[in-house]
Amino acid sequence: MASDTSTPDLHVFDTTLRDGVQREGISFSVADKLAVARLLDEVGVGYIEGGWPGALPKDTEFFARARTELDLRHAVLVAFGATRRAGVAVEDDPQVRALLDAQTPVVCLVAKSDVRHVRDALRTTLEENLAMVADTVAFLVAHGRRVFVDCEHFFDGYAADPGYGVQVLQAAFGAGAEVGVLCDTNGGMLPMGVGRVVADVRSRVEGRLGIHCQDDTGCAVANSLAAVEAGVTHVQGTANGYGERAGNADTFALVANLVTKMGLQVVPRECLAELQRVSHAVAELANIAPDDHQPYVGASAFAHKAGLHASAIKVAPELYNHLDPAVVGNDMRILVTEMAGRASVELKGRELGVDLAGHADAIGRVVDQVKVLEAEGWSFEAADASFELLLRAQLFGAPDPLFTLESYRTTVEHWGNGVVVSEATVKVHLPAADGTTERVISTAEGNGPVNALDNALRQALVSRHPQLADVSLADYKVRILGWNGGTGATTRVLVDTTDGAGEWTTVGVHANIVEASWHALVDALTYAVRHR
Image (tube, rainbow, N blue to C red; front, top):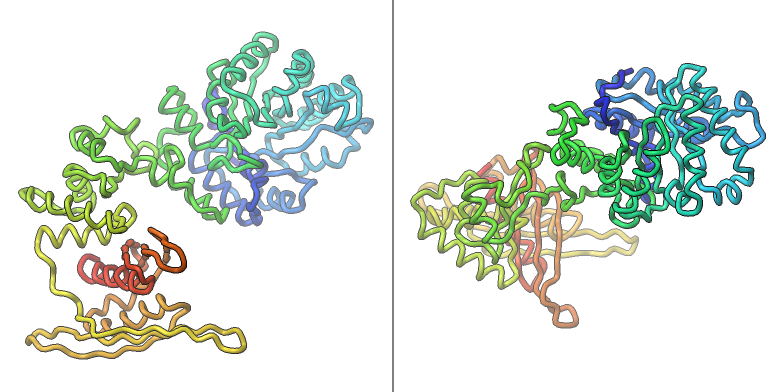
């Protein structure tokens, strides 16, 4: 098990595996939790809260397996639990005993710090609650554990009684707790209020203060940073902001802001560039699509669409980027749309590895063509492969087509037993080296008409282009444009294709969804042959 490698000035404490899993739709297996812990360790957080042993069998198993299966380099594993129950001796409380059985070097206890919760939820006295905190902390410290205390509902409690939460902190510190965490459990605070309360509490207690913010006002990260500015030296968050209701403060945004904006080296320097990779890997384990617009780590966090932006970026990228994307493992992207100007096309060409030097006229033609096509419903900002084909055609002339289409046909049969079968037949003419053509008829089935078309077309071409044997459809997206009532509308299709080593996206537009799909499929296979 790792020793504490976080900066002595500030702890970064991640609670994805405990608080983050309260997000609707997340249910990690024990293997998933172990994998997430390894990923969080790779971004260099100081503490990983693994769950609540004794309360949840899955978490009990996680801690048992972690002892032999986790080899953390940066983080310290933390078990979470509650103070002893009212009227029960601490040594007789099975939940407290389960915290010891987890064998983690650090334990984080949740304690009530709002007088209303003590009286109405715990149904005990204010004095007994203080004793519960002190007894449990002292017991765990006596057994060699470092103890942090989460003061639940601290800010709401402070509004009702500014003194009682401070008494809870004093009881915890007096019994040996290392950290007292001020929790915005209901997530209703704003940064100015957090800063004011933290500053007041900081002036009244000795000991390290922490902050735990929910995101119900959309301010969890801002509230956490305000707390740091006011004097807390322990910050809690979750990967990608996962958590109950609107979520928690995002650990990745917290780390990035603390390091790059506040100058606090809260993770090892080499770990900062792992933020995007780990963010996306955790999202995959959670079975949640990564948020493209997530600060710092989203795919669109450094994506530029407006031509004005691209013109400035061409001169100096920092003019429209608040930091170098590579610092957090991300990259800048230029989106080519109807808003694009010459600079956007030049930068996109550079990104795609296309040399545009000396092609000023062609760049102008590309800009004009994109504007016309986008007015008709085409969109190239998410279809780099189609744009690259368009760009190369304007620069170097359109290459000879892979085939000439005679016809295609698709059918969908719904059998009486509920089985749906799609079939496609493609008739194409393949050019030969001697100038002749070969007529090929290919028929294939698929799990839908587009998949069947893809299979049939690749089957027809693979004898001439063997690399297509490894190509397959990875994803398919449809958007209806310009709906005019009934089923009449323009359809835009995006097709993601892979060869196992890489992935590329192409676009097709037509009033008929199958024909739109055909255009995207032809681009996808052409790209595979010409540029893979």
